[in-house]
Image 1 (cartoon, rainbow, N blue to C red):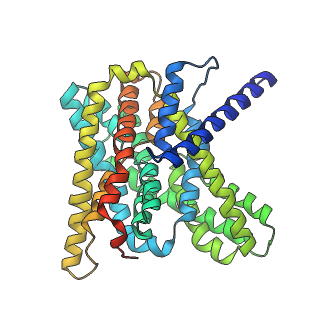
Image 2: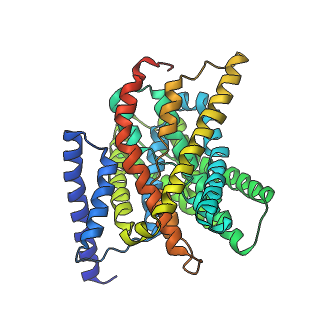
Image 3: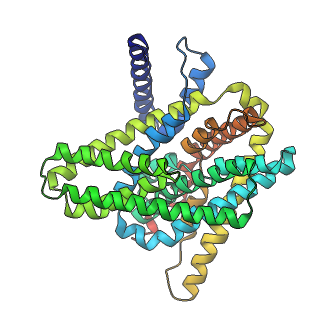
Length: 407
């Protein structure tokens, strides 16, 4: 990259962050829409106005630069004492739930617009991962219990990786057909191997912290852990996001407890909170900038059909799989009953975001009907954000989650 191009990229970066900061101040004072939704709307507005500077959004910018920061920070903030009791529910939502969503979206899209099922299923894999950032912000302000917040956030952390794996399998299946058993086997292998690599890197880097007592070096090691786990796992053809989540959980549960001084914990908390804020800001702005208006219009009907399928599949997963399993285990005396209000929040937290857009941008250039598939994913993502995002506040307020204490 030339010197002038570098300066130009920095100018764009500064302008985007400045605009996002203004949006953050306005959204937090007016409390009309969640910050992340406001950023997407700003991005769409900028795309419509067509600024004189060309902004080319590479999928790897989101997948390899911004998302690892977000999932590592989310995993690092996760309290393992709250996650472990909820882990069966999280895995139910993140593995069978993602598969159910991909299949139902594929069927709905194939029936409604006559798209080849292989391409319809591919769309389903792209919109299977949830991004509840807008919901989580509202939950934090409403006083929702930490266990519910952990469940919603952990589902997103895990199903980001699962969704990317299924997407990769689906893209490969377009050239070399693969049956359901093959999909299941590749998914299990990818999840297990990626998790093992992430745990190993998390443990090694956590051990490296012991006795250092230098918060700057230890912050640097946390960066190496976050991006090293992603890059190494991706290099061997596995899920970098799953590895980063596993690494972050080990770093939180083991490294934070045994390898960090109080000063280091404070430094890492502040640094990663800022990194996550910056990554969230850029991710949602880039989502808006990536959404082409002409593509949205061409795929409007299909996007509405996919949104309907997502809402139906979310109901099946949350009320059927999760609620049904919780009710059965409660009847057997194994767990306490899960409040209906929790199920309502989990069901409505199925927004789509960065992963869906990044996967759509990464579709092979020679893929049939690529522009249409991208338009469907962009439109569906935008619909979930502008419909479910702003309505989360009245829903959560009406449910009075403060009374559902199960911590």
